Image 1 (tube, rainbow, N blue to C red):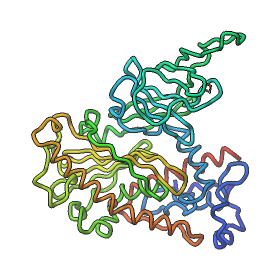
Image 2: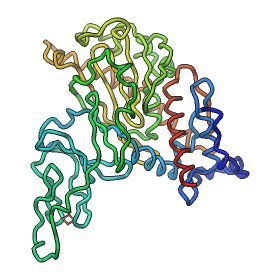
Image 3: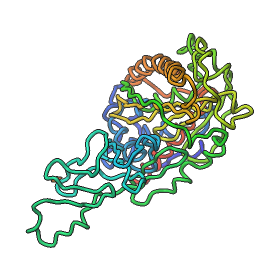
Image 4: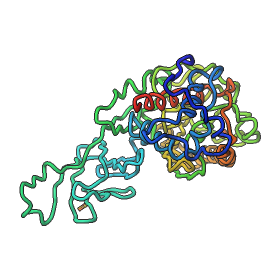
Length: 416
Ligand code: FES
Ligand SMILES: [Fe+2]
């Protein structure tokens, strides 16, 4: 993979000079929407595993044009995670949000299945739904065109004199939605790739844990002033633990296993822990029951998984904790922390109090990560920031960088 250059993009006599004089914020893409040749050349160095690959080019974290290309290539194409199925437990529960800059609404229909629609009214385009909540139908606030939970247009006032107007032709545009292992994925492509191919052999490495049956008990929003990718990266590497978490969680983690060689748009890495990975060492007396059926080494550690591009998951022996990441420009990310337990654990005595100790552990760790992430972002904005190299403790970060580079380079080649 590393020896697969992109010849058509490699000539950039001014690149090194331009990167020295600080034009990065304007140099992401040329007018034909293909990558700047300098960035493309840097991305070819990201192909391959951690021992040979370079880190992503700094421009990929700060450049408005690269961000726009990411939105197109990584979020408006392929499957994007939008959380757990139990985010919408009841018929009519909905959430409106953007995927790749496209307004989308996810709703649980009257038939009980989840649906995803373009959140743009078929009359004159207003966003139909805002925020989240529960509804019996979706009504546009502008002229009250009203849609059923199945997306059909069921009401359109004062349209009786409009020639050849057939309500059946003006239902909401529907996107593909799939549920796997309790996670919900949406794809904006008209002809989506197979979701089972997308997540590949996820089941091979996650089958010891009853992930599909876990129940969300906490959902907490955080806004972080950094690019969305470093938030996912720091969650998926052991390298920073002794330096960023010396007094909280570092002593919990042993040296991780060798990384898995996976098939699919994800990366995963397992490591054993001392005690549980879900609690601070001072709270080990609050340990909740182990998930049913867990045995062997899987019961003795935490598996960290990054479902590309935007879902990061840690599953330990008693709990699963994860973040959904929604980019908000190159400099900001909206994150939702979600914590899940088996229903039998939720029903066990003293659950509420003990669960608070788990939430505390996750909050302490992320509170230690955030200042470093924001400091990293400040450094990446410098015109003098450059690509670095990976440690063997960052295999999942390298795996993402390789996937990311492959996607952006392929789109750039197509645009030529
Ligand atoms: S724009 Fe929605 S009803 Fe007019
Ligand atoms: Fe961390």
